[in-house]
Each structure stands twice: as C-alpha cells, then as structure tokens.
Image (cartoon, rainbow, N blue to C red; front, side, top):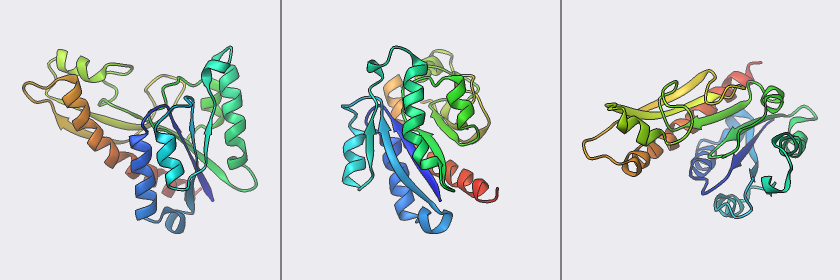
Length: 200
C-alpha cells in the first residue's frame, strides 16, 4: 500500500482537489494508494478542517516551536515514518506547504516527494510568480507539478498547465485562473507517479 501524506500550510485547496479525485477515481482499489495523513505546520490551517470532515487523520507540527529548519524536518520525518514502514511506502505531497525542506529530508523521500508551483518552470521559481510574469510581458502563465530536489523549484516535471495572460490581468485574477488548473493537474500527476511506483 502507498500511503499519501499531504503537507499543507493554509486553505488546502489543492489538497481538497486531491482528496476528491482519490475518492471519485477509487485510488485505493485501482492503485493500492490511500490518503493516510494531512499534516500542517500551522495549527490554524483551514485545510485541516476539510481533511477531518472527510475522515482523514490530521497532524500539526508548528514550525515556530523549533530552533532550526533541520530540527523541524527531523520531527516531520518521524511523523511520516510510520507510513513508510512494514512493506508500505509513503508518497509525500506538498500542497501549499510554505516551508523549504532541508536537503537530507528531500533525499530521504527522493522520487516520492512532489510539489506544485504556480509558474511554467523553469520560469519564475520562488515567490510572486504571477506578478513577475505580468511585469515581464509574458503571454502565458501556468502551473507545474514536479519531483522535489534539493534545488528550490527544480526537479523533473510531471505535469504542466498553460493559461493565457489577459489584458488587464492582475496577480490576483491570474492566480485564480492558474489555481483552477492546479486542481486538475495535481491529481493527474499523482496518478502517474502511483502507476510508476506500482511497477517498481
């Protein structure tokens, strides 16, 4: 069984899209995969409520309680470890998780650690992607699902979606249009990865 652990920091809209897809497409029966945990680094993350309402176990590790990134990541890895033992494997899905993970954590879950970024990588890694795309005069923007590597917002690309940048777009209107596509491509990318993990 593949245990999907979703990490969030806020509303969890991508997490919700993944949960709905897993239920509608019967991932447990088709891919031997289930969403085992939704974990947040913020106790007030609204996405935790959605997870609980859908019967998914939740956990919180408040990053503010730790003296360093490495200390936080060590506890995070410990919380994920039970889902990555006894013949089970953990697939760690970053869904609006606003923490940069240390290199050793990335290595611990190499090839099983996914992120979604609101740009057409390799363009515009980092923050403020929509405003930067508008200011650069881009005609298109989008979102990218990729495997996480130690280099921020890099790693093999699994899925991308493209949206036009319209005359009069603001960062907010563009972000909303891109987000609707994120909700489509993230579950699709996870399925692709589940299929490849099933063949290992």
